[in-house]
Image 1 (tube, one colour):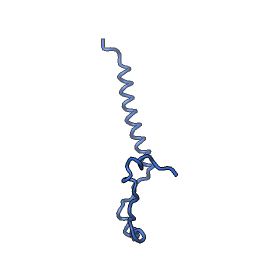
Image 2: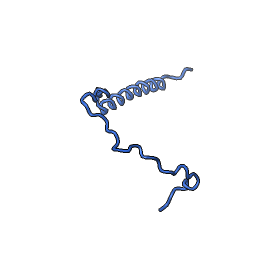
Image 3: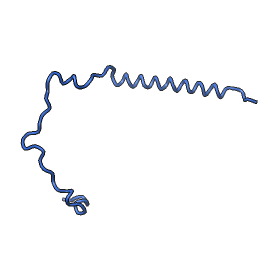
Image 4: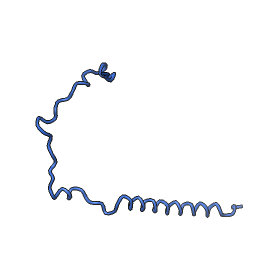
Amino acid sequence: MTYPGSKHLFPQLCAPTARLWVVEPPVADTNDNRGAMMPKRRHTRADNTAKATTAERKLNNAYAAGCIAERSKPPPF
């Protein structure tokens, strides 16, 4: 069996910890009101992603149109 090198450098850190519970660990309450703790999504993640992509494309198109219009101008002289 092998041990990490830190066991030789810091043996006090490699000591096992105490048990957290003497009996079985506690279980979260399961009641009907638990759903009220977290709001439900109004839109799916796919909808959110699609809306974000559309909005970003709209910004990029507006930016690109401005750049193209700027490049298409005749020289100032």
